[in-house]
Length: 547
Image 1 (tube, helix red, strand yellow):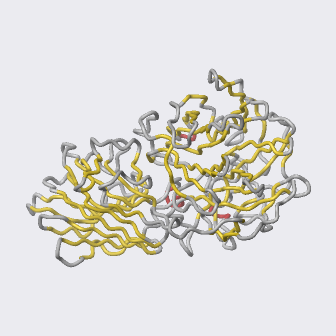
Image 2 (image 1 turned 120 degrees about the vertical axis):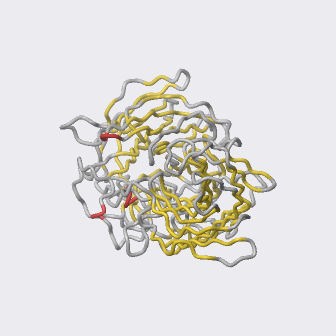
Image 3 (image 1 turned 90 degrees about the vertical axis):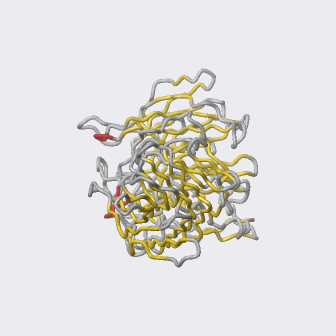
């Protein structure tokens, strides 16, 4: 397995290649096109697809599930669609996607269903989800040379006295009738880090390679490898595992419940939490691993952007194991992609719209498909019908986009005729149902006037904090959020008036994976609430998130 020497010209690419909340990447190639799929958890549309022709420039092109074929209403925060596995059937070029729907994690008994869908084009139409099992999560599909298909899954262990989380199991899958053989336990981890998950099976030079994540999806995370002469093993563990990790010192974390493991934070690593890898052989025969990573705010362990997608160049050593081309095991912030050039225009992170055209694929909503009964782009702006509060796990009128850098400015212009204290509309920086900051327009019957205030929801206190509430006149309101290294500064402005500060400086570190033990990241968007009769309309004239 010789390592191909990079050719000139080449591009120096900065990680993460897909910034912001884009975890659990799986990368594939079909012909000259590369596709990368990521988890979306409780956000819709489900499973993001990014596309590239050179591994250096990536664009969000769509999603796997945009309709109600899966039901996420009522799903808890950081539940929903976990760890998609995108593969290409070699004989037909058909795409297969396996994903988990995590319904509950109460008492560490994970109630999860796994599904498979397929399509001949990445943009669909995709088949209706086929239920396959509920053994555990992070299922993946492997297509063997003879056409046999193997479903590989983490078998979630709940029994007292048994090591947590469990084994990797394999089942033969028949796509004709959707049946599976009985599960066979094939691997128990390549290291003692524990928290074994994210299995992906590959065949290289006649051998089967099982790539896994170990050490939890936090600071002790790593990408590991094992190999066998048969899909069912026995598997030999790579003595160099993990071969990608932000925390290289060995440790024993078997049966350790904490997946974040902040004690393994490594200040020498440019990126943290590296793990959950996926292998790719590029068109030029170079090899890469896509993996998740995190960038905490400088000087902190607060990953407000969530877990992101990065790419590392790897090669096969003389003993047939994958190694980082840059040497060592630490994820590299910069990698070289042969034959590529950076397209600066495509690399822009800005999301700016007046909503006169269909919604950008960068917008997402919680727990269900976008429906024009409550979210309708018009020539006069986006009409949002107020529904549940932002604390709800059901019908929330929130349209938001991922925060993808530590410094940004968000602005929105909103027309909203509030006439009850249960009416609210405005601009929000949002993590989940218990953690957000909402600059909202509402109504005070005591003042007989519309008001504007900053509402802060935090896990723990049990009641929202309302800051800086003042009366405002009728008419459109402009709202602004300045996001600077974890600090939020909101302001408002009436037409023709001056900007006025709203609520002072709010630190946003409480909205991070590390503070909440969550799996998503911060979003910025607009929302409308009508807890009185679910009918009031907020018209969003414009929205922009610029970096």
